[in-house]
Amino acid sequence: MKKIAIFASGSGSNAENIAHYFEKNENLNIECIYSNKADAFVLERAKRYSIPTLVFNRDDFYKSTNVLESLKGYDVDIVVLAGFLWLIPENLIRNFTIINIHPALLPSYGGKGMYGNKVHEAVVANKETESGITIHFVNEKYDEGQTIFQAICEILPSDTADDVASKVHALEYEHFPRVIDRLLFGS
Ligand code: GRF
Image (cartoon, rainbow, N blue to C red; front, side, top):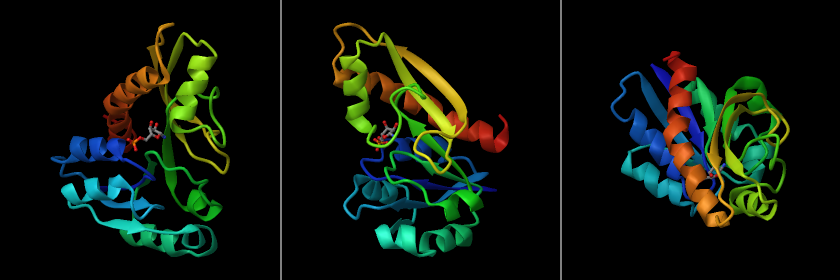
């Protein structure tokens, strides 16, 4: 049995999509969904799938071992960041394989402050002809860990940031669970 944990700060549509993808897979369990926001919609989504949740604050995350101990308690194989906005502390990086999804083609449009619609607005402002997703290992710097997978979508001159977001979300939903599946089971 493989065990994963998901970290999310917001809506959690990717977290739910991953939960849905693995719902009937008896070889994988989502042990817990972690969030730094007590009112994040991802926590509602977790309830739908009866996944335990843990909300933590900055001190828990950066000045205590609470989150580390919780993850160790669940004995997770990997930690999946799905729209989680805080930098991951070194104690977690040292102890777990952590992966993230970024809504652009890294190394472009990454780094601190480059998240959510800011990414898509920058892509449109620069008149890019393509964008996409990057799934990568997480290290101690924002968006700089080794790339695992990328997928590309075409951007039309008429596309707004919201249009780009829709295209990118579609790629995320299609590929993120499959990449996790491959990483854990080699399928
Ligand atoms: C996604 O676009 C993901 O790439 C980024 O944050 C967004 C999260 O969306 N890291 P959701 O919370 O999964 O709906």
